[in-house]
Image (cartoon, rainbow, N blue to C red; front, side):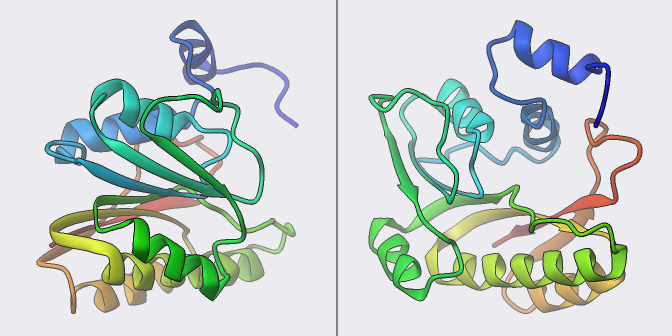
Length: 191
């Protein structure tokens, strides 16, 4: 357990965000213009809700569908927000999400429960990222964008090659807001 909040955790609290992870999305957005012209956004693994919160602050007219097994800490009456408490691996949920789409931006900061075994954790993260990539293929608009977290462990190269079949451009990026001891990175796809 971390004893002392870092700069990002303090800044998130000061700015009214639910989690420090918002600054990962903010950096990626500033570098790659992810939310520009985003009218519909799918946020997978959304709890506690800071990424949805960021999108709704920066793009107030955007419609956000947020999914997680855990509850979001955003008010239930947040305008333009649809919250689905469900397991993102369920095929029935995928069909429901297709119905809410298409999306201009698919976001996933989801991570599997960690075991402490880096190889196993990386493999589980890669499986989760692969499922998100497949769902993005089905739900993104013609010019849509994808951001998906994955634990570094060798699979990210394979996932990028897989993404390059359906995306005009795909790359990996590790935002500065990631903790120094974290082995997460983000894969970005641009149609």
